[in-house]
Amino acid sequence: MTKSKLREAKKEFDALNVYEHISPQQVSFYKDLVRLLSKYQLHLKKENTFPSLTSKQALNKIKEEKSLLDLSQIKLGEKYLEDIFNDLNKLILKYGFFEKNEGEQLKQAYQKKKLNLKQLVIENITCNGEYIHNLSTILQVSSDILIFIAIHSIKPILELACIAYSDLIKFADWYKNTCPICGSPPYISKLSKEEGKRVLKCSLCDYEWLFSRLMCPFCNNEDQEFHKYFYIEEDSPYRVDVCDKCHQYIKTVDERKYPSDKRINLFMDHISTIYLDFKAYEEGYTNNLIFYNQNNLVALNKIN
View 1 (cartoon, rainbow, N blue to C red):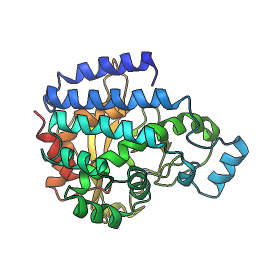
View 2 (view 1 turned 90 degrees about the vertical axis):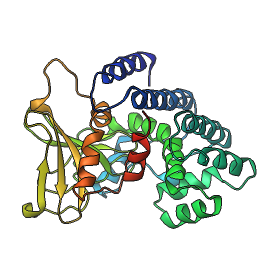
View 3 (view 1 turned 120 degrees about the vertical axis):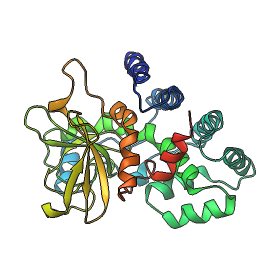
View 4 (view 1 turned 135 degrees about the vertical axis):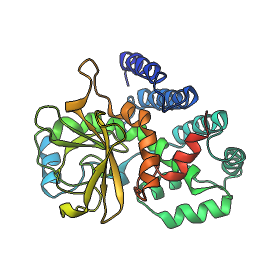
């Protein structure tokens, strides 16, 4: 993220303080998190952390319905992982995110070489839940704190890959429910202002892609009897789309109802509507996103 974009992000974070559904401390937590990740992203621009692709290679992968980024070829330097781990752990301790002693336990585990950061990141991004569960038992910390560290350790690299690869597939056909850049699921969606087309946003690299409005973005169910949505305020641009087949949900921003004097920013919209996540859980819906799960929402809600 460039310095000008960081300044722009700061203004948007400051604007969040006026929202009634999010506390100043929660805004401050996200602001510090974004600033931290941006710092590492700027540093990583000087390094080759992922392979380059030609337009032909990229389009061939899309035709084969494969995401562009080969996760096995990502370079995770030990110094980088140690530095970002320490900074993320400081953030956890500063805001009391997760249980008070977990940050300290994790720090001690790493110092005693009981925690292999590279393996943690790799096992997490390849969805090895058994590894995460076993490691949490051994280290006596929650799986959630391990996942938080793993996700945000690799997120700066994936966001850089998104910047590098996105122009290669600008006009490519991709209608899968996973990101064409890194293969991750979406965490929020929007309905475009012009035609009401559905756009999904990746939960890890931030890429946006078109997806059918008639399908569940998690289980691909097309039976409309299972599709519903709800909202808190009728005129609000925010709603929650749910699927009664897989019982998952995704928040949606309707650009057609969005204030004309505001620029849409799906990440900021996600932060300002966390109350909708709680409502979805109350109604019996969940999602399989690694970070935006119920336990982490409860932990975030304790920051006040």
